[in-house]
Structures are given as C-alpha cells and as structure tokens.
Length: 199
Ligand SMILES: Cc1cc2nc3c(=O)[nH]c(=O)nc-3n(C[C@H](O)[C@H](O)[C@H](O)COP(=O)(O)O)c2cc1C
Image 1 (tube, rainbow, N blue to C red):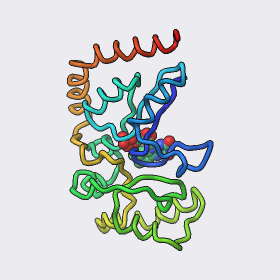
Image 2: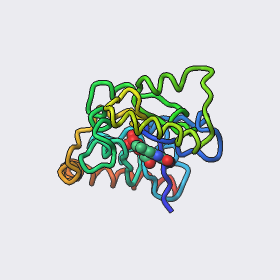
Image 3: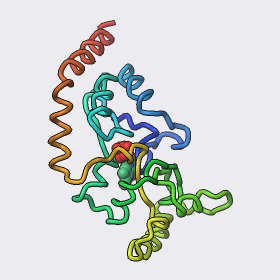
C-alpha cells in the first residue's frame, strides 16, 4: 500500500492520527524525502502542489505520485460554492492559517473574519464533528448572503497558484507539461531509491 506524505501546506484537515496534529507540522519539501528514505513502498506527496512545477519537484524528491486538493476546489466542476471558488481566485487566498474552529480538527483555510474569531484565545471549540455541525449552520446563511468573510474557506498555502477553471483542460495541460521532463527525473529518483535499498 502506498504511503501518503502530506505537508503542513495542505488545505483541509491534517491527516494526523498517532499524535496531535500540532506536533506533526512538517513542510512537504522536508517531509517527502525523509519518508522516501524510510519506507519501501511508493510515496504520494501532498500539500502545496498546484501546478507542473510542484509535481516535478515532488518527483525529484522521490515521490511516485502526487495528491492535489485545493487546486481542484477552484474548478467549475467542484462542489465548493461560488463564493468559495471566487475566494480561491482572489488576492486573499495568499494568506491561509490553521484552525480547529471549522470542525474541531486542525484544518487549513483562507484567513478571514470567521477563522480569526474562531482562533481567538478563550473561544470554546467543540470536539469533532460537533463543531462542524455548528459552523455548518452559519455557513448555510453566509453562503446565501454571499459572505466570504463568514465562510470556512478551506484552502492550502498554494491556493494562489490555482489556475484551474475547467478540470479537463487543467489536467491535460498538467500532464503535457509534466511529461516533457518527468521521465528523466523519475528515472533518476528510482535509481537513487534502488541504491538506498541495496545499501
Ligand atoms: C476541503 C478539504 C478537506 C480535506 N479534508 C481532509 C480530511 O478530512 N482528511 C485528510 O487526511 N485530508 C484532508 N484534506 C487534504 C487532502 O486530502 C489533500 O492531502 C490536500 O488537499 C493536498 O494539499 P493541497 O490542498 O495543498 O493541494 C482535505 C483537503 C481539502 C481541500
């Protein structure tokens, strides 16, 4: 079974189960090669990968695949609301933060009024999934009123790189760009992994 290496940059929930999410906040660039060096299964890199440059970097670090989340939220086909998708393409998408306030579990979203108020010291946060239900009630009204400042705007740190509007066109151009240079990089990474296994 492949191993997923999800960096601190990723949008949404942290995939931490063994210890507190706050104690395992490592960036993708640091995390991927360290996991690649320790496991003998394919590694999937996630977190902050939003275009061909990110995919190629992940392959160079030894990952055999990538997982992209935030970039697809901005696409027309995503189930994110129009307000959320517009926010992902706006200037404020460059400023994200972590919060337990959206659901009770640590998650990353665009820094807005909701996130800031939920992160204020002394604000009581219910355990997951009760907090999610509470915030959901607010989200329904905020969405209807077009209030991006009061919505949980799930997003990773590379939200600003999201160029995707149409998924098919985005994936086609991604595959095309990556294919041009991925071959030699993947071969080089595989050879490096092989040497390490033989050591
Ligand atoms: C809206 C949203 C919800 C997510 N929820 C979870 C989750 O419940 N558990 C989890 O392990 N990862 C979750 N993720 C992380 C994704 O699986 C993926 O690893 C991440 O989006 C990749 O980083 P990126 O957003 O920078 O592309 C979520 C991501 C988003 C955008």
